[in-house]
Image (tube, rainbow, N blue to C red; front, side, top):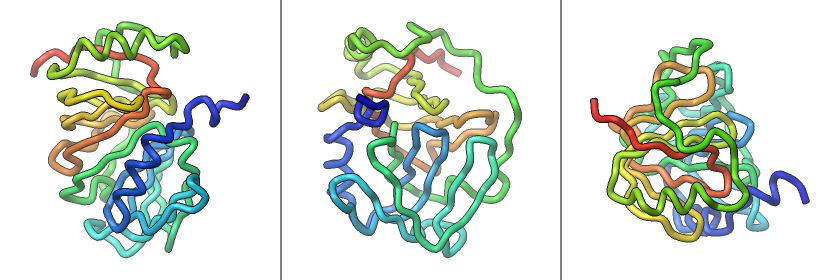
Length: 195
């Protein structure tokens, strides 16, 4: 069994099928972030993205793990490798001044640093509903916000900040208001300290 089969989350794909013609951020296992408008899903696996309505440009935006921003007319994304999605997009979260550095966030207290197949982290997270949490995933993403609910191996967050691999600047909760994290891809859960 391959890694994509292990992190595939049918509930996340169903969520995305209900969001056709909606702007989304897709966070990939490989560290890439895709910002576009979902036009369709082929074979319950491939999402077709066109330029986002809230984008500052007329192309789909792709942010690499190193912080380089690229653009394309349309993009097809393998949903079996998606570790999270951002929704309720208010402003373009990948605008040109996206700053990158070599250090990733280290201030959080983690419950576990390693991915655990036995779902111990999910049980810990279930006890944190309503709390301000930090969730890290495969691909090097960090999601901070208020945990609303856990359902179908998905965690629903009201976003404060989202950090990608090798970045010190975040995608703000002012730009992306909510995120859905694939719990099959989490690597740690933490209680976030206030301010």
